[in-house]
Length: 190
Image 1 (cartoon, one colour):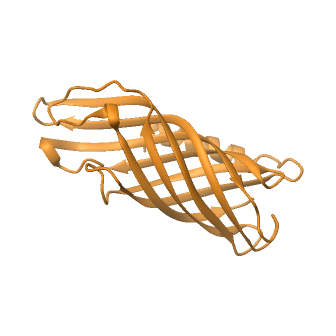
Image 2 (image 1 turned 90 degrees about the vertical axis):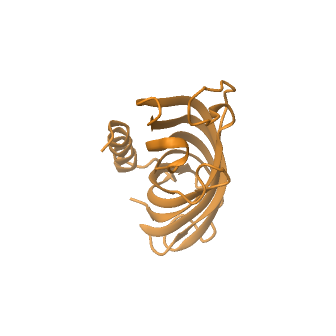
C-alpha cells in the first residue's frame, strides 16, 4: 500500500473517530468509480475514500483521496502508470429528513489539492511523475438507511491549475490535464 494512502486512511479514521462537535455530522466513505472526459483515461477504474464533517448539518469540510491505476492505458509505449488525487473540499449539502436516521443529502463540493500523474516510460526506460496543484468540483447525493449507514454517489471534475507542460516521449500534455470521475460507495456515520 502506498505511504500516501496509509497516511490518508489513518488521518480519516482519527478525524471520524474523534468526539463529534454539537450538531456536527461526520462521515467516511470508501468508493469505487470510473474516469471519463479525457482521451487518456476514459473508462479507467479508480478507488479511494472521502472523510468529512458537516457543521450544523449544512456546510462542512472533506478530505478526498482517489487512485486510478493504469489511467493512461498502454498508449505510446507506457508501462505501469497511475493518477492520484488528494483534495481538501468545501462541501455544502442540505439534509432532507434530518441528520439522524434515514434521509437524503444532496451536496456540492469544490476544493483544491494535489494531482499526481506517474508512469514508466518504456521508450526512455525511466519513471516520470508530475505533481501539480489541482482543483475538483462536483455534486452528488448521500442516502442514509439508518443512523450510521448509507450509500453515496457523485460526479466530479478534476483539473490541474498550473500551465507547465512537461515534455515526454508519450506525448502527454500535463499542462492541460483534466478528467471526470463518477463514483459510488458506502457512507458511514459514527
